[in-house]
Image (cartoon, rainbow, N blue to C red; front, side):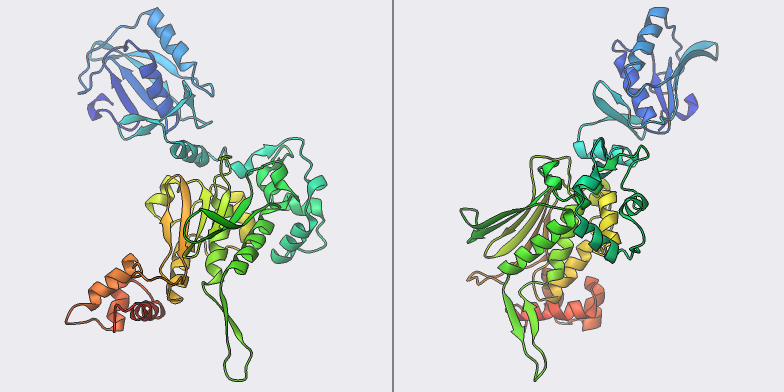
Length: 425
């Protein structure tokens, strides 16, 4: 083991350090990983030095390991290596991850232990252990039947194609609204209770319309509560009241509505905000803000680390139970495709693609067709098209589609938008 050097599950100490907690931090990191060994009596280069550990130090090590929470049993014993005594702290793979020491979480990264300081990293570790998804936490002594919004349950039954022969209690049990102990989950309260904001005051959507392009003058301000599906429907209806609407009449046929922005973009953005927001964060609401030149939808919580690495390609919800209920109602069409779908919808409508801010809060900005005397801003994709079309040997439409990785219909709409903005002829 010593010959291979320090690895993901092996750490060397030449002697017991002055601060015994240095050993305990390594132990905690192994417990949060796949287990491992702390070998005392071997230097950083793998050279076996040997060491003696007196009883008082052994007790100090065991006492320090005893401070790890949840309780973790580790073996401490000596082995003879080449005639020298090496002490082994054998750490099992933890069954109750995550483990804390001194109020902190330690994890193994390669051959080193790291202290997690970022709340998102800690939360992701918890979620990997399937322990503290907010929407799966039970609310003891809460009687969901006394607070049930039966109109929402009826709509859920209809959209999820659940037979009317299944009674309320059986339906809620079938969709796992309760824990094994029979306590209702927070996600079920948020989704089916008549006024969940009475219990979770921050679980609302605040809709605000401003005059102009800043936050100086408020025209309209509403806070929407109720079941999450109701919040979604109310917020969508409020947005429709603020959007410009035109009617197109073709011959003698019926007229068709043409919104200034595709409604499906808002449907996608609102569902994402309600399903993926950080409900642990009680200092902020989900916000919908309408300005003359843009619409912003913001929800607490930046991207989870895994999602940030694969933004737009992978989906991982902070609230998988809530997300699954939206899916059952067919309000989530393609898992992991929301970002790409919103971009396609905006580009197909001849509008700039959405802009995102993902640090701390997740914010999506949708540019409106506002009158502006300044030159319109271009998205990175539009800039790429202009660059590709600026050469003498211009690509065909098919070649352009391949170079920018978009469908032909989307490419045509980008070209159309750039012509309208005066960048192409």
